[in-house]
Length: 180
Image (cartoon, rainbow, N blue to C red; front, side, top):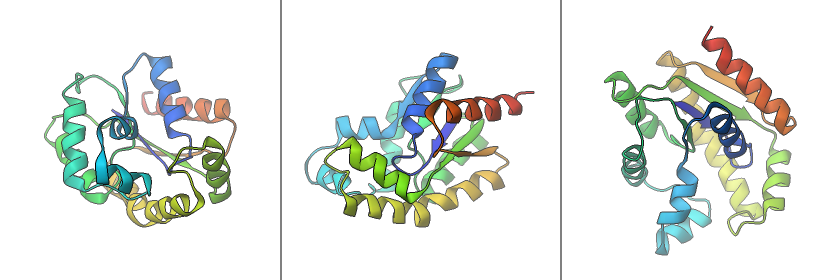
C-alpha cells in the first residue's frame, strides 16, 4: 500500500486518485468513508475538525480493508492520523497482514491550505476549523512520519504547493525510484 499523508488541502485525495487511476489501483479514502458513514453528534464533531477516536477509525479501516485484497498494491488516503493508528498499521505490516510500500507526504504552506479549503466551500471548511486542522496536523500527524522512517518504510516529501501535474510527476518519480 502507498499511504498518502498531508494536511487537508494538500492535494492528497487528488494525487492519490490520479496515481490510483494511472496505475490501475484501488484508492481508499478514509475521509470519503467517514463522510458516508458517520452521523449524529460524531458527524458534527468531525465537521468541526475534531479527529475521531483511534478505536473508531481502526474499526472503520478494518472494514475498508475487508473490501479489497490487502496483499495487492493500493492507495490509502487519510490514515493513519495518530501515532497509535500508525503503530496499528505498522504492526499489521510487521506481521505480514499487509505491506506498506511507501508513504507520500505532501507538504504545503498554510496560506495555500487556507486558499484551497476556503474555495472548496464544504461546511467544515471555515477558517476556525482549518486552523484547528493545521494545528492538529503539526502536533499529531507529523510525528507519524518519523514512525514510518523508523520502521524503514520509504517516506517521500513532495511539495504540494506546485501545480497538480508537477506534483503528480514528482510522486511518480519518487515511487518509481524505489522500485529500481
